[in-house]
Image 1 (cartoon, rainbow over the protein chains, first blue to last red):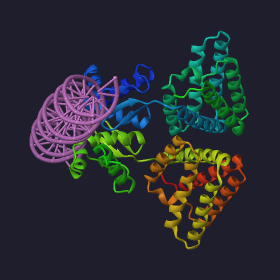
Image 2: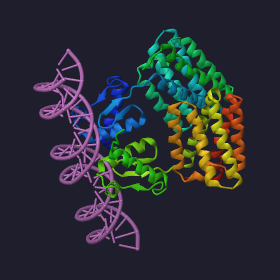
Image 3: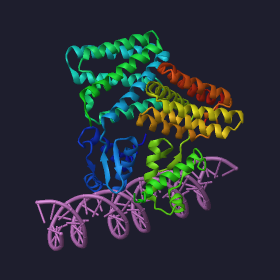
Image 4: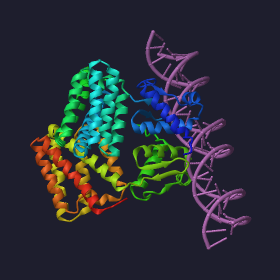
Length: 216
Length: 216
DNA sequence: ATCCTGTATATTGTTGACAATCATTCGATT
DNA sequence: AATCGAATGATTGTCAACAATATACAGGAT
């Protein structure tokens, strides 16, 4: 396989997204085309193209003749996104319950066990990483490309808000107990139950956001 | 309110989308930047920006150094999209059942009555139009901006495939009977039932696509 | 002091030109 | 005749300059 140089638009897109998701560029901050272009040694063309893609993805807002700004979400936006995320999670669980294989169950079980360990050690960072992996795996196993893409896009939007800490409960044990219940429902191939569990599990994220009273 | 001229990118985006959705540009067809630019009396810059947005929206595919092509969906893609559409429909119904107002019920009821009339007249075009209106209204009433946007985006993708005829059952009476059942569930504020009805109603679209055996 | 207003500056919008890559055609070789 | 390869034409990728719009600032009138 020959290594093909990707387009500058793709490079810029990646870099811009990285800066936004890392918090280097905070919500509401403007993205100056000229400055960003010079810093990355490209012209404004690729920058503009990348920004148009990011706008469609919901990570930035473009105001005509004013420029592009990192999207600033109101609490209502976050709630809406969380709700949809929960519904999609429920669907992923429902599908997976009907199609899950022995190997997939083994993978998921292993992740939950690793989380169990990290929870005991109060290792929040590690727990969070495996937690993401676990949920991602459920969507991957659900065998619906589009569903996976939507989940990825939604997560990026939520990630955007530095509410990363809120995506997982502070009560690691409780969170993992829910994971175990999901595993159980999956093992029993109980689609309705898995769906409900997944949805409730995801809804708790919304509840934490609401409880925190963040107004964006 | 002063009439502000919209950017060329926005104009081109609208025109390109129109041509794609109308079928003037069919799936798989290339979009030649230079030709499209000259035909619309603009330079290639705005064209490229609009195409990047359409790519993110899923209406076109861009192959590096080759160009942009109207997206060609495989049957599997269509099925995936239909499934997600059904899930979102179910969610919209669920929410609406809990929040629906008298006025909204009146609006929906009126639409169903109009469909009833058109169904008797075998006026498929008119039925289809009201049908779209009905489903759109349910999403509008659900008061979730993001949900509405997703539904609109998904519909555009499905529209893309000239399967427009399949979006509504050939059996207009049966279709409208389902609408009436949805109304009934809404009136009873039965969230679970409304959700199930909406989802099943939407799933029938997928069934027709599968039955037709279209492979894209 | 505050509020206009006109000017200067900065930023985005658009364009045409040039470079890089891909598709095609024609000719040479086997 | 079929195949490979080089030259040619077409198309996309990138850039820098120009135009249009918005912002910032200074000066004057009230």
